[in-house]
Length: 185
View 1 (cartoon, rainbow, N blue to C red):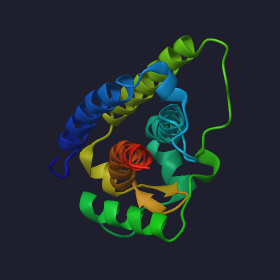
View 2 (spheres, rainbow, N blue to C red):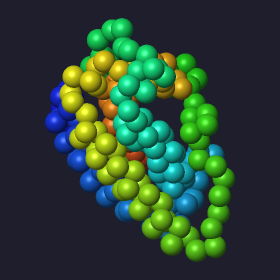
View 3 (cartoon, one colour):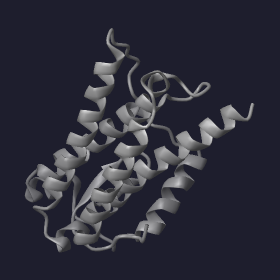
């Protein structure tokens, strides 16, 4: 994927990421979707973590820009590029960063197939809500306001969008690596 920069490119990247993500997560059979990968999260837990981490971004994008500025302040530096944000996030993880309150809570349901459908419906909904809220923002405002990130500190709204976009790709890559590692044991 070419690194997005403009609002239009970011929205297009989210469109493409949703298509790829839904295809990836939907390819698992129900048993594998809920089965932990060694001691790591199952694919379902990864999706639930993504939903849990995207929702606050959707809420922030739907909040009055004046309230966001009062609550989190004005950005005092230019936005990082997508690639720089990704490197910073990976560095934070390498230094021990974890999901914290965004980890999926333990949960089991009586009807795994129905629960899986509900999880995927929520995933699609939260991604569509994100794009809907984002479409209301002028490009220039993405660099003027900031939002708090639990690992990376204050990020401009543009950087938070870069994170949210990359985060979905990152979890697919992590699951793929873990599945490959488990299969080779």
